[in-house]
Length: 346
Image (cartoon, rainbow, N blue to C red):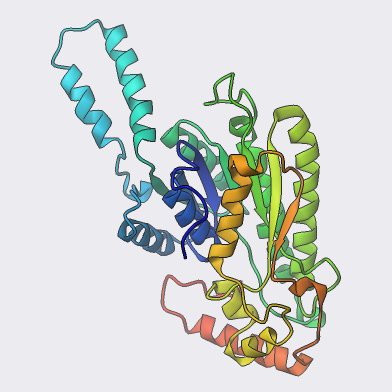
């Protein structure tokens, strides 16, 4: 589908995207790259990051994978070696090198993958720092890492409940906190004349009323929305940072949908949707581009719902025993998955 935005609308911007190597996060990474941004992908699984890098390369988006410690600045090195042939004062040479280094970063957008778990503060700090060191600035943070599965409340363990909150809620706050010094107006890597950056937190609509067999995610996303609005108030006022959320509905062909609505029930879900169809990852990515571009420069503290109107209705389209059967089948497939694929229902 053709984008409604100009190809260079995000030119010169650097975005860090958690969960950026799969599902909705990967589509956002891809579209940001296609629209001129340099992107850093954060994910827990090395193999998934490798696969994401390969796909981005196949789409002609320049990709340089930090897992292999491959320098993206080949052009800079060529220029630098050329200037080394001249007898110039060291201070002048260093100044020219610095200019060329930063220029080469933004002549061509790039993407890089960093392995890390948003539940671990040390990983969050390391990935944010690595992104800044790699690109020299951070303009956008997208928190798309999430955990989800269908389960009735009485069958949900405290650990399962806590894990989803740790990924979605605590992970989102931790990443925001670590990125603050780079996103705020006048922060590291930002010129005194440039404003603050932008944060997007991927949420949901499950907690707007109530949702069957989703108590853990409903609680987690309610916390994410509260975080979004509070940071928009505090950091918008103090640091000129815009903080917004996107609440997707059922999105086809994502890991989440394979767990929440496998083939056993996905066809029934469409019957209850006002638009009678599932959304696409592209829909969420276009919303993200709108929010972080100048088109959304006066939007702050909002959560944009992109679900075709589904949240207006909460039908019980699956009985409890059917949920248990689906949950067991998903868990069985996870346990039988090849090495390198996550084996829990998360």
